[in-house]
Length: 278
Image 1: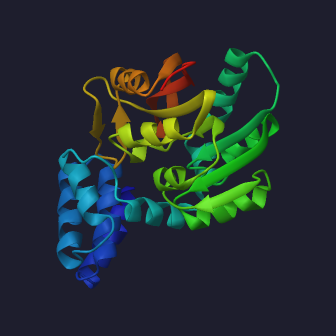
Image 2 (image 1 turned 90 degrees about the vertical axis):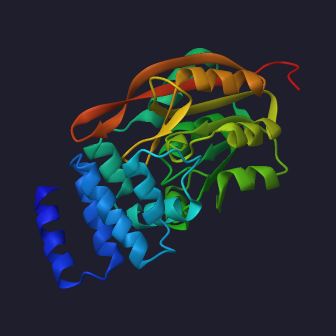
Image 3 (image 1 turned 30 degrees about the horizontal axis):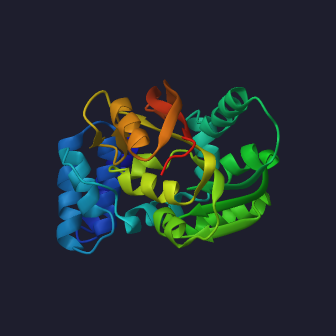
């Protein structure tokens, strides 16, 4: 990161009107915990390109402001650019294994290998969770905001159906009811989760399961972190579950992935729709 800062500062001197140089330098400063310098870079990028899909959001994150969710254009752009190296970086460099841990926990709780009729992987990325849950589902759907991620997932040949788009909008448009929802590492890009919980509840079959993970906030409901990712408190997750008719079967703290060689703590959550819930 220090070397990248040096190179990008030189690039900024050579072309001070390029908003992407300021954005990239801001990200490197943020990776080093130099949040004020990151904010200055994001502020300049926003001045140069007022319609930039990420500048205003990342400036808000560096300042510690409260926003309800990341702009869809920011998330799509982020993962389109990340798609080629996403899987190797996430698993090998950051130690991410949540899809596997969700599957192990689900098998332990459910105590059955009987197939599930319809399952959906929300924010499927390159298909890491799809590989884990494919053996359980007669029909497995994957959806992701990033078209390039969806193309990578298609290469795995584990999904019966794939779609690119906003997961909440796609759930609202769907006609299928699902017995299993898997949502690994998606909630860190959504602050207020009420609309997502409502969309899941609307498409849930009786006794449906909802499995997900998110970064852990020690208090409050949710907060936007300097990394541009959201964290949610256990109290908030339990409140949302109850409000939408879900029973909390498991909610525990686990290491989610690494950041600067330190583990980020997160919540592994297993919910089940209460019988007779309206």
